Image (cartoon, rainbow, N blue to C red; front, side, top):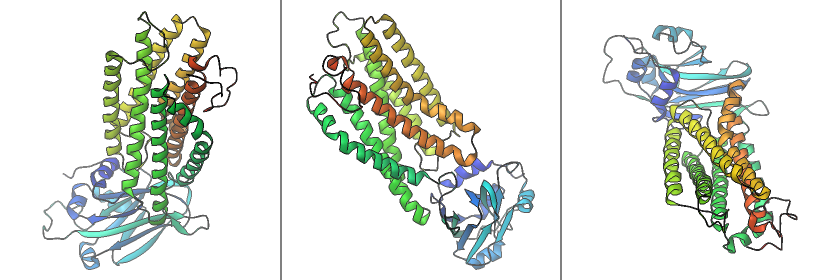
Length: 429
């Protein structure tokens, strides 16, 4: 009996042997195709007309001897339940590998559709032993959508179209904002006042976010030209974003738990500054380690270079559950603080802080839930763009809070400062 594997399992099984991107290189293996009812190669979302699949094999005589073929399946419905022979006969497009290079046009797509590419040969559905002496076939496959002029030159799959422009616009926004606000922010950091640690962590997280955006843009700019990009740059972008996530989690947990514990102390001369304790530090570190492990696990399971994914893995769902749990925990801590607080100004401070926290933690789960109603080619883009924008807004909200609405500036700046990332000239620590 031949074993059956889902397309997702097959994709994960062979992803490690392939070059990431839409110019895919690797080897066709008869034993792998036989074991899995066809060797899964990649997937691509085509749109419009003039979509193209181009292949190149390095030993066309061996390909002819094996009767090698590429099978292209449109959509995923029923694909996993097909037997070996049914797969061979039900493919929407079948390409015989009888030339060293060949192009195949994809039929017109009225709406973006996912296409799966598989390799099969004469040994795929045989029950007996294959010839162990048969060599593997080295290959390169290029998949392209039509560009604005209708020519098949766009390496971006339909779910990635527009991300390149988004990263460029975000880099431009970061550059303009830094030119405007770098001086007052530097002055606030150089004073080393009671908010120094908070502002330093926020600044580091924002810098890491900006670095991640820049690296993603570099990767996608190269990807647009060759369909491969620079996977190392994409991995570094994910690493920067993971470190930013961990830093922000430690900051928000330490502040909330520290404030909660400080209320039981007699001295509250500095009630809103970073107030760490062994208990708050231990809790924050434990959750940070858990989130870090889940982030690494999630990125290892996803082949695309996106920091935020439409969840398809156990690690992704656990990560979302952790974020929701943290949001509920912070809500309960802030509720206890606000309920016992008599000062309206302090209550307003804690409420604004809570808004920034909830926006940071809940934007990803909410957007993933919202993506259920979207088409497949829209999901990844909506989640990626939405989470990056929401978390950037969250950092700005927290900046505004700690720069202009903390009790340390209540006399000199609460009545005069209305713009984010600005401070009154009369501000004093």
